[in-house]
Amino acid sequence: MSDKLARYRSKRDAQRTPEPVPGSPPPSSDGNAFVIQEHHARSLHWDLRLERDGVLVSWAVPKGLPADPGTNHLAVHTEDHPMEYLTFHGEIPQGEYGGGSMTVWDTGTYETEKWSDREVKFVLRGRRASGRFVLFQTRGKNWMIHRMDAPARDPFPPLDPMLPAERAKPPRDASAYAFEFAWGGRRLLVPVEGGRTSAAREHPWLRELAESFGSRTAMLDGELVTLGGAEILVFYDLLYDDGHALTGEPYSVRRAALEALGLDGGHWQTAPSWPGEADAVRRAARDQGLPGVVAKRLDSVYEGGRSKSWLFIPS
Picture 1 (cartoon, helix red, strand yellow):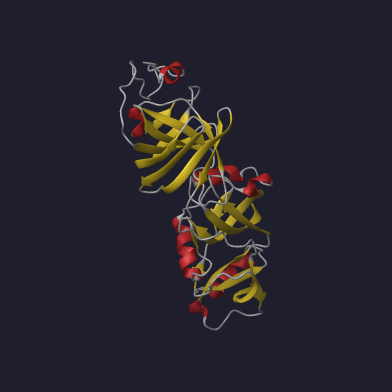
Picture 2: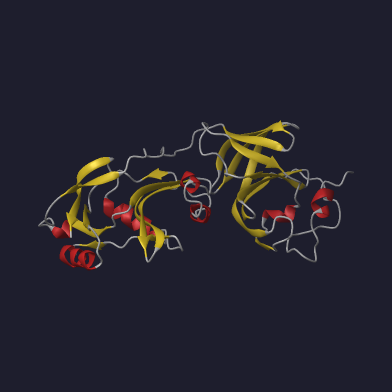
């Protein structure tokens, strides 16, 4: 019987990596387990592994599973892995093959609809990943993965930022608003999908932020400002989170979801917000030389373009 794990063993030294390195060929089995691991190696990717004949047949998927049938994702066919990898997680030392952090993103069972050397059709039944998929070979070890069904997932909102109307004085019903600094910077919407963002083309340092989201899909609204001589991206709204559009939710709900993300890095942070504190925030903006404050109705939905639900009040 051929040793399906020979290539796997040839790439690893059991004395140098915590990964399982079995010493003998695996027995044949008819199991139907799968695992998806989030792998922060040289570049973020997800490892999809399907149990087949006693091993885990594996593909590295740089952008994760496609969320809908309209997009195919690259899937690189890698060496078979041992069954122990169903539960493996940990830190593979840098310098070793696949060095980096690995966590179990999802696990469960799958149903095979077709399995050939060039095409694999299957149904995943996991906690986070479910649905019908097909893997098909394009060239050599490069395959593509296609989603065959349509999950319940909201489309991304349009890239049209909400803008405040100008007003000379704060609104009388201050308790109905949250007050934030008007930074006087450049507006930036940041879509995050598959651990990547198109905004990193112009701002490469955003790659680290996108990777921190893992497989979580999001759309962040913020502003590029200069603080203490450094360029900082301050975020003040969340328009999309993990498959759900938030644009129809009240600002208070979106703000709570944004704060729950805990965005605080070397180049980005969550902008402060003070409900009902019109006068104090306006004085602070004036003291710091900022152009003014923005009053945002706590019950306002997110609507592209200029809106009277957001008010710019000069300092």
